[in-house]
Amino acid sequence: MSVLSAYRLVRRSSASRKVAVLAPLGALVATIVLNLCLYLAMGKDAGAVFHAMLVEPLVSWSSFSEVLLKMTPLLLIAQGLAIGFRANVVNIGAEGQFILGAIFAASIPVWFPQATGGWIWPLMLLLGGIGGALWAVVPAFWRVRLNASEILVTLMMSLIATQLLAYLLVGPWKDPMGFNFPQSVMFQMDATLPLLIPGTRVNVALVLALVVTLAAWVYMQRSFQGYQLVVGGLAPQASAYAGFAESRAVWLSLLIGGFAAGLAGAAEVAGPLGQLQRSVASGYGYAAIIVAYLGGLNPIGILFSSLLIAILYIGGDNAMVSAELPVAAVRVFQGSLLVCYLAAITLVRYRLVRVKSEVRA
Image 1 (cartoon, rainbow, N blue to C red):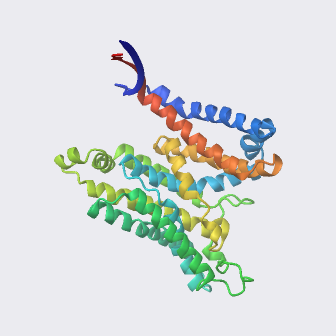
Image 2: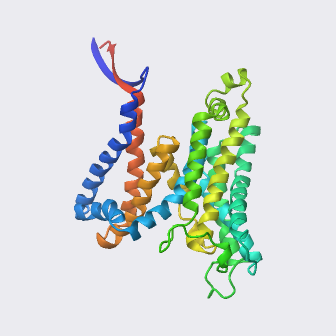
């Protein structure tokens, strides 16, 4: 007779709130240690790399303003995605919704390049949100009607959005005076967002992102509708018994996420880009997934996690120049941060239990 030991995860009866708050910090420390080993194995000066990535973005106002600029779309998209994630609706297609928002917003200055007035950029933001929401209608419809996986459908819709953007920029929306570059015409002044901080590129979209954060907190933490949304996604049978429809949770989650991503896309083309370019598809929609989970799907936590990821964006560019770090290593840092956080939050909610079993020889 021999005894075998194994381990399995058992959910804790109650998770410590203090430990849950410290989990992101522990994940960051673990990520730094793991990547330190990676940089040493690559023969890089780890001190110089971490200084470039985590310190340089904060040492001057000009660099920190760029952090705020990067933070804005991440914060907008992540707040929309987190609402769906908490309702167990996994929207992976924010990148496509972001692109459609940019396309819808760009339609005004492309079709009406001579238009003037303070109404243009607010209308562009509104159209951008509508465009992102419309792009989320297809996965919402198929999830409700055929129970199709919204993960796969939203991801495929993002690929279609990328091709639609490429078609427009090499076809009907291509700037005839753009030296054959795949880009639209430059937007007129009234089609760009007003600057929030003079001397920087930070615009009013940052204020909009903070307002969205406050609205998301009120909606999810203080409203009965937010409670219905979460229950409708997490416990469909219980919610149906209580009169909450699962389909309503799916529709609201995807439409809110799509609107937020489209709003961010509109702010990007009307803000730092000033025209529609292929570079608008820069991966914000995918990075926002990391932001949402790293923030614990909590609106306030997402505010801080978006700041951290924005620092890594700017710091990664610095590290590629000053420390000769390849771009892949920067992405590994972001990915390992998410993995470490998921591992940390799993240990917060579960505990390892040793299970013994007897086996006859």
